[in-house]
Image 1 (cartoon, rainbow, N blue to C red):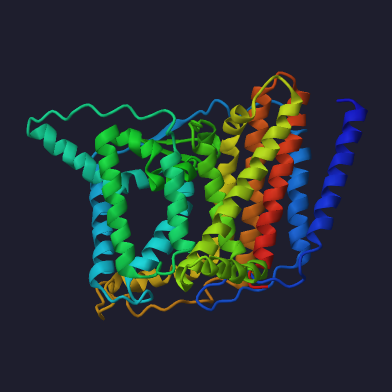
Image 2 (cartoon, rainbow, N blue to C red):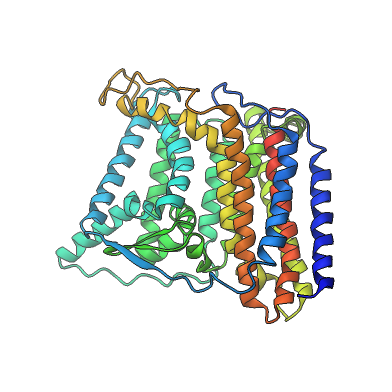
Length: 477
């Protein structure tokens, strides 16, 4: 390697690092993050923000451009770890159906207090926040416990035993791709972040039943596996995080692979880019909605919609809907801006092609945002699930002897929570850069073109990192 490129790269590293540090020093000295049930996390030192962004730059330029000269992840290699009894798959399905029925029944028949009914905590903490963590560690176990998949497979089995021949499924439209999954995730985020009655147990139960019914209809029309891979919002959502796991569950066996290898094979059908940007954007809005900037904007939006004839609650929901869509659009714009910049490298790759080729690099970032924004929620409020499991209806029962468990805020210090959040952002974006760099080396004929293309993806990752850190700093400031 010549001295001139090395000097140029050094100048780029220094300039980019200085820019990131200078930008991040504008953050407030004292910042409080996403709290929960009155729990207030300790401040994050300003220098920690700056050095986190600088670390991403150093890792990308030095660690990738210098130490990663050839593709390493484009051809995943797996090895079988253990044989899995086939009976475990239907048993897991039965367990999933049981949990689904318990949660729905608790929502409908139990007390309608969100803090004493199992449904809200299970849906928003265990299911929505806990399962992404578990998927990234243990692989796609949700596919086995997926209740609507289990019901659909059982119905198909019954039909085959009865001698009835099921009609051939319709061909799933290619253009539809993962758009249903993207819309499904956006809808859930709307319920979580916008809907005024989101904590109403009975309404959550009704929404859960409605969603399951839609999935059963979709699977009956287009086939179980095709629908699960494309349109089941939660199946696709948890399946994406499972691709980061070193474990891969297959029929009858468990295989091992290097971390990140699984996501390289992501098939970027239409809607996949929208899905990933929606995942990151909705989590970003959750953090943004906790900060002073949004709390100063939201009343004006509510007044605007009230002037249009909306009553108070619908006007509030409409204002928050605007904010949610804006944040999803911002994330999409940042990603596409970086992709369009990559076109300047040459070789005739179009924006749509590049956006799909590199979209897998957003998966670890989506997980990083979840860890950064919801870690304290899972650690603290997740403890309430043990008590609610013993008294799911809130009627005073104690099935497992755990109803008296209360939240222990000393389980982990607030300082440790902050370090986990910031580390998650740094590691997630570093992983995204590694995936993008490896794909660029495989895509471009000249290594120097691959490196130049990553200047644009580096800008995207730094923007996402800075945004994530700013959201953590701004919340409850």
